[in-house]
Length: 541
Image (cartoon, rainbow, N blue to C red; front, top):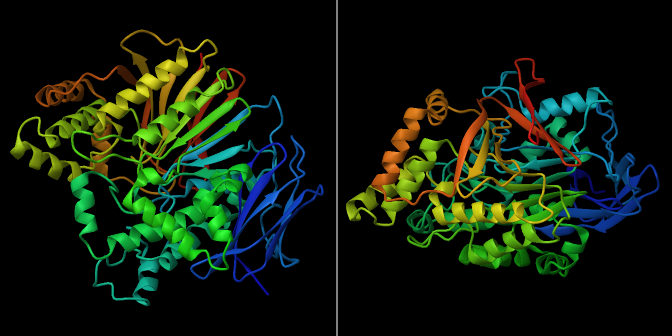
């Protein structure tokens, strides 16, 4: 009899449909049965000896929240026996309701040792605790996880002990994961946490990867990639990481209609074992990332979310560097400008912040110019060393792409039926802040803000905290201008000012989007493992 190994995860939802992801211990038929009669079934598919199902639930009624159960071959497996959590529900959006979007990134899932958590209380656990204990608590309509859902290169002590039972950790890459089975272990460690497991079963989630899902500083530069490809373990790591990402995260980002048109989804289901078909996708991506798209778009009523792959879709050749390859950039433009007047708020999700502290931005632009040879070969070698050592690989390190995104936002804001706000949602940098952009060419007439929220569960060294605070200061801006002048860097088309933060600690941001209004709330965990509001403001006046 098949058992439930992981999940369920509630993923895509609209007014009448939802998808629920599960992993079973063996081949079976998975069924989701709702209290109002809505239901769905799906046969499992196999990848590398693991069995998964993505069940499409149909017959849902907009504006309702039926509870549901999961059955494997007609045997109930969810809710778990004697669960301390309320029943999981599928909440379908109604028309005209406010949309609440909760987001964050960087969740290191290592279990606390002896009851002590070295990086503080987990913000997702705290959210689960609040929602499960108070049925009337304000509930997110969607949870956006903006990267580093797992840490393939910074494993816990418990995971390293498990890895040592499989192979010699004295051989590269040591205590980091290498293959699909080891990636699965990371997802078990992360998503079997009882609170997070329940939360993901009852709040729809959408995800995108960042570097630690594969390795720190993934795709920093062409020289970095060449060095990684010269190792004996990189290709296996990348292939396994992309395969596991496709199964655990990417599938749930897609609607049932998109899945029906996806050739890899069809190929995986066309054979008893889809490992080879999925491996082929990962190999195509490793050879040419423009051949595979992980970006996607979701509309929640009159809120549009465009989630951008700002890690794998890069062009790394010096002199032609771009955060997005031409096809990806064209796709982003199409999604932002499509259906003029169809949305009141535009949310652009990118794991890496677009607007950084001014000194950091100028240092990254300067370093990019050095690496491109603006000051000669010796400076170029220094620039590459600095780029890797200081993680200088955000949007600012791709100046053309930084400006292109500014131009695209400006064009969207100039449309006759322009949105009421544009928010760029990011994580990565292990602190939170709010920055507002203004255009040198003139006022756009709508707020354009960078909202950075990280980490969900991690830490940042004290020295970096000081650096992030100082990076916004007037002396830091002066130093940044000197660096930009030395690198002969073009002036960016936008100015920006910090309007809130920096905030440190494990945290989540929530946007409440109601008609043409947008309100932001930042919550942070305290010593008692509960979320506390530390900042709240209207973004639209």
